[in-house]
Length: 77
Image (cartoon, rainbow, N blue to C red; front, top):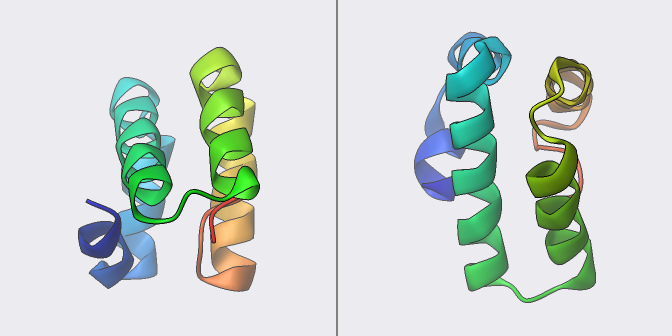
């Protein structure tokens, strides 16, 4: 799922993240696959933060901003 998400253009990624329930599922899916692929503390911290606070739209908006600057989600290696 992480590779699929990375292949999408920025507008598609932003739309998938901003839609409230869909954004939460996409974030959790991408982060779970990132933890499976690479067991780093940064990936695990990102997953824990989004499981506990990911329902907040503010985190999704911050993620869209980080995505526009770095071409990757916040706290993913």
